[in-house]
Image 1: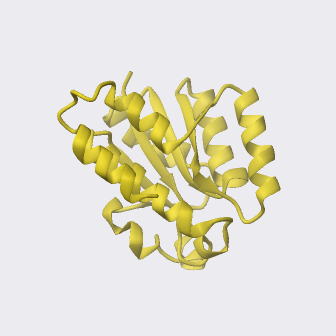
Image 2: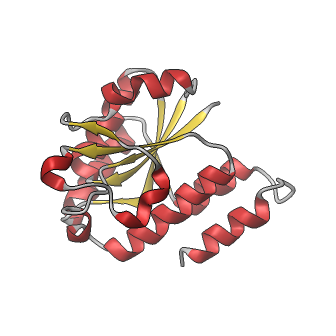
Length: 173
């Protein structure tokens, strides 16, 4: 299975308004750093950056985001997914009930396995996240957490990246 991480719409005007933004930021940093250490391809997206701003500076390690106006990132991600031969996408970012949700549905419809990294996603309202995650689980998405998916990717404490990844995870609190 070939994994990739898609980080959706962590932008300046919206990010501070989502539930538990400081904790979300820590989890996103740990996830991104861990995936980077494990050579998991990562791509970020920005929803209409003229209106919502750029990706928050704290996530500047993401490189060049793909701009989009569709809520789903599936169509804009097609080249990236093809080039990286991705068969399993890890989804993180905001908002769970809009762009994360629609991206997941479209990815499933394109026969790509989807894991929603629940503690690395959020919405402005908790109920929106809760209902979206319930629906995504029923539709076939795996619900996971940063630590669970990272240890799944590591497979063993003998992985040469184990200590660095463990440090990244411990730094997120």
